[in-house]
Length: 308
Image: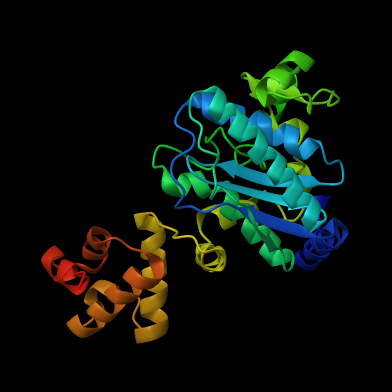
């Protein structure tokens, strides 16, 4: 029945879902922070600590998150002040964990900046941006293989089913040990898979899926729609990097709109150099990428971006 719905019907359903969600914030920490998580044990602890911190605030709803080696993205619905309180509690837990591992330091610059989600399309874009974050940075992962976030669960019922079948209740002793506190003692609904608290018990990615018309719409967002990534990265102050395939699509679109040519490699030398500068300054393209894409000699590209 659902597949027979019109495009407009599906959009209206998504819009109603968004309107019911209330205030939603994209919390992100600085991407230039020193590396925090260096081992699988660190990532697992961080995921459990994040679960406990945000579960302490029942008025909040986590839609998506991704834990990277030195920064974190979280999409959470609720009052801004509560979102920041939950993050502060997570940071407090994390500091205790690192101190217990012989790595004290206080994390002075590990602060969450809240960016309010503006509308339905922005909600979709932020979910896609978060869930593909590791895939962009790590060539060994797809959006469905990275274990330290929600990306592998979106429109992937097999992954959800595995966690539903394998989850086991977390004990008071586990929650007390991982937080080095009694904060997690009352939280009885947090379950473990693979040694850490699983996102299926504290994240509502099933509602996150309902912001998209269908699975194909979501898949297009995380694999082919790259302009939104640049817009979000600009908004939150991150330097996003593209794969060769993504950069090529962006380059073709730029060549078509600017020079009315769908074949950038055939552009005159002057236009190639102009396009190279756009790719470098606006898309963070590397010199070797630009050289490959435009068929320019690497020494020519290097000379364009010499540091003065």
